[in-house]
Image (cartoon, rainbow, N blue to C red):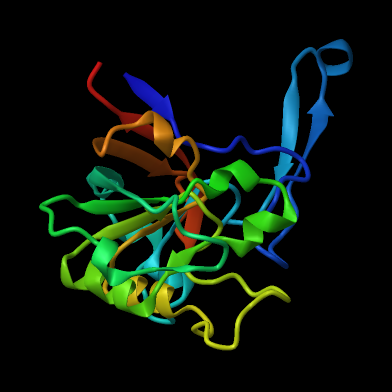
Length: 212
């Protein structure tokens, strides 16, 4: 069975603060042009997407450096739904597993499109380091594996992009804004092929493959 884990790309959809706005508008129509063509404007980190190391690392690899098979993951889902807003995911949640990727199931996709979506749980620096030590790529059903800056940020929260630097600095990949992780199993295949862009990241169609 194939499970869609992707937010659709739509005009006005939620983005990371100050990222490019998303707009889809009609460019050609059947009545006037005989064909339908839409014009799409968005940033490279729109919606459900993958971060390449070049996103935060000045000398980091771009998406072009990764073979297609690198975007098929043996994923292990970890249940983080008990965590509150802006609460860190502890290192103890990172499993000792032979999987390729840890999918953090926070349930925060329920807040997609609202201000509360920015108040998501995030990886603690220790959890990010544990993922690096075990060679895990990371996926989250939230905006960011790091805390997203808002007026509700606590003084004790890590600054900047510590989880990004730890993971991307070790040539690991980050998938953000997944949804529907409740429909997959604790161990599943995740396929998340990016658009054929060469740069720092790209939208993906994330699909979970589970046994029927």
